[in-house]
Length: 278
Length: 324
Image (cartoon, rainbow over all chains, first blue to last red; front, side, top):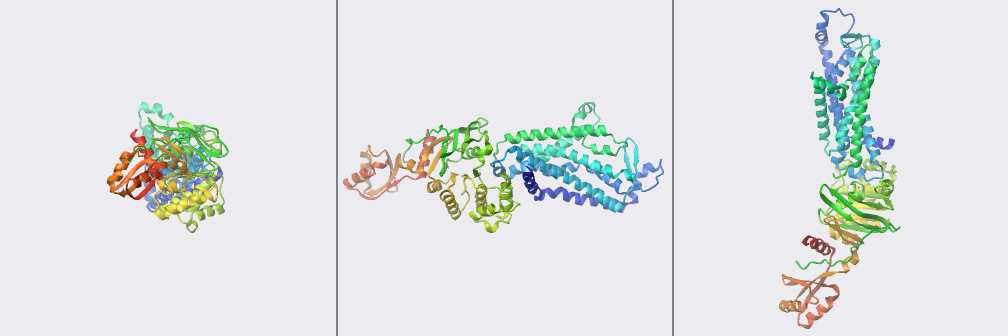
């Protein structure tokens, strides 16, 4: 299995499309952070203006932590699009290229091929989120330094600088878990179409619809909200509460894991029964 | 049209258990797509050492059959047995000694030939670099081993397709239209490679082609399918010996030739006259008698050419089915 995953990783990471998301991050994040650095005091005064009417701040609240936290909050809707570029291509890409005809005639079970591809998708997703974290947090700290983190958790909360690093670390772990669910959905769509664009659009469609359901204040939507994965997709934000609400995080992790398992299970059932006509 | 030849007695019904000589058997192999049956009750038998030609007009079900043989498509009914292992229940053992190429050769274009073969070899437990170079050398691609496949011509991709089929040194090689899209020189090279694989390396070849002359040149056994059904199966030489033949006759005066052909209804089944020549449908063994009659009646016979190519045979079979 390790050999299959290794070669799937080679296929994935030698493909130019794989780096599209990385290139976008390499452009967007430095652009934002350099712009914030240049704006400097103006950004922080705008950000903190309303608070400064009621509070007197001591210390540096405009720092790398708060900027990277702000970026994390801003990009969590966009990151799934970039991830689905690759996850949606894993199975459908083979159909489009006609290479199913090469790999599925070999004496190896479709189940092993399937899971080697899913594990590769998981590796990509984790690498992508880690890259996002290192770039976002690392560059922000280099440009704007460390300090206390001001977050909103049913009210403003100021976390001391010594209490922030582990929270970011944990937040990115849970963000990777959320993004794995998005990858699993794209992977599911990828299993029954023969065009890589389809899974990307379908994943985005699902995400947009369910995000709307998650935020629209309608009674009907509220009743189904606990059962849709977008309710838990921002589970990482709960790490920045004080105290951390671990039971809520555990519930979210379980739901997201369940969604991932259901999507992968469905994709597997389709894949092993699929007639290869491409 | 010269005639309708449909008295071919050679259809083999294969339902016996696999013997050591039979390495591929299909048992009532059938595939249904929605309401349409693409392949119906197909019983094929390929022996060790065969170059087995698999023929049929477009849409006859050849590709569907090959996809079932290589487990790309699940049969609706029936099964495939490879080396004594049913494909449905012992897929790994069945495919372990089989290599193949299905339709056009598609690869990971952004990777080199070597990397492509490494990836495909990994699916079979891994292959050594030495073996990769061996197969690339066999198909004449050793000098392009590190080049990305997207820089390859169609002919080179076709040869790379054969190389990947040979990667695990299989006993049975299934080749689906391996000369498709090649120029005459490329076709000749592939044909020679097929003969080399069969004669010098002892491989069994299952060869599908729409170029009937190709099959005639290399195959020792063949099957023809039409509309998803087996029309005929057997030794190429025996199939071509039996049955009706065309005989092209050129002679003067043509009126006397016509008169002889009209009068000898016991020999001549049908004939057609065009451009001063007669295409005559008749049994092979009566050709000397007809020649004798023509000479006795004062015909100056300029040519008497028995014609029985696989193409004629193939067309006669498939057309007679179509007419029915």
